[in-house]
Length: 615
Image (cartoon, rainbow, N blue to C red; front, side, top):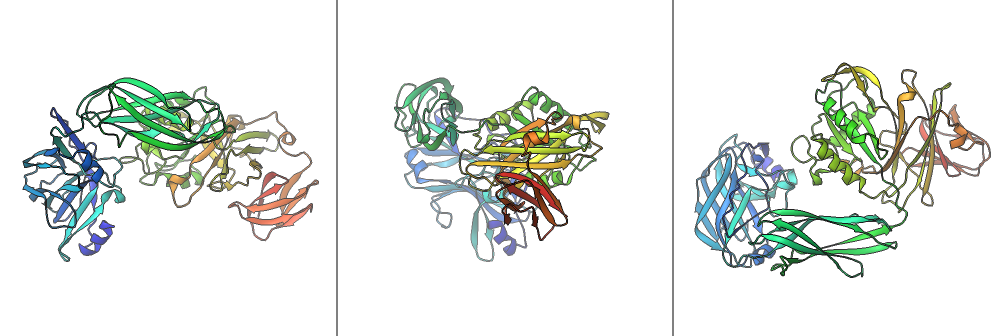
């Protein structure tokens, strides 16, 4: 990594970042195209020491061929809080070469986009090249402007000059979490593509329900000189004939438009190749076709489950902005049975409702913690706009911005395929305060990793203090306990099915009439918070009229005492698992099973799983 190497060579100096306050440059001249990889100027970065720096973008052979014969007349360059000295722009074939195709001394203005007119326009050939700038950066300044987008490999080149070796040390700053360099080419000439509509951000579910309607969504960007008034897109499913859809939408040069092709139905289970293609623009052919098509393989399954999603809020009584988020979620979840809501009292300090598991779940932030915040199905939603503490959310947790944004994330998550079903039954005994929960379901496919089952119990209707809400604020959906391990219990799926039973004694301080059971199946990766997505969820309020025997085997009773697991009733085989999925013992028809170590164990008896604690 550049920043590791430079830390040794330059007294441990590392790249630093602060927020930019500069407005984005908006001027676009007629009969020109502006090309670059960056969005708005949002951050500025630097090393904090006096040093020579360079920043550049790469023009690949494909892009060069597209613009071959056109001229670079100007550059748009975002500069941070240091104009620097000895500044110049350059064009070169290789970042490692000392030979330049073009150089020009410049005077930058700081904290803004700079428009640099080339003294001699540069004509593009079919070969790749780099365009960049160089300057002597002052100490404690941040001269390089970047955007908040995910960096691409061609748009994030940065270097510091190493005086010891006499070399520029280049690196992709996107690998260190920063965005694209704010540098754009202003192109002109009669060689520019007149009509060029590029497909971007195509969204097609990897799995779809056989016989159920699904959609193809995407974005087209007008990369041609001429404005677009209409365009035609075709989609082809497997060997079926392509189907054309015409969109009458004005797309100005340099701008983008979204499209949706709805109500697509596949009649039979199977694997299909889906091809999406731009076929015409304003009724005529696209003059550049290398960016016109997209292909993806999908699977159509008739046994997909009904999707329900899990929303986990992070909120504490000291969070003054959290009542706003609570009201928002009340509005969103009202009269819906497809959203399970849990509130973790963590992320902005702790309070009397905080449990240990909620503190552990702050790992999903993957950065500074804050509230109000939430995650939906523990899925990283930064790709559709979810923001974290500063910029796109690095983990599944995102900041609560507006109800419109949250609904966008909710709808996106509900449209994801449910590869496993989750069914919940429970029985609550008012005399013993014992809750019995059964969770079972089927998997539509063989999941790539061992799934983990999680069971939460939540309570609502609790009055207490809330910053921004007063002393008699009503707290709802607070997680009270996790019946499984913090990150869930490894789930054994046999012949595509699972069936587990748990028991838990409800505290006398809690009100069962205000409590619910939430069960969900998720992936778990202790090395990557973005690989812990929830497969599916279900929930229900406590049941008082159900008998335990109605949801479990009436002829079996399983309990633990004196280091043994006891089973009453006839059965064929019992398997004892640790919560990480490790098989500990197997027994056939015996009444007691000895276990060497204390802990929580899952006992699977003829396909039904019970949870016991050895003390």
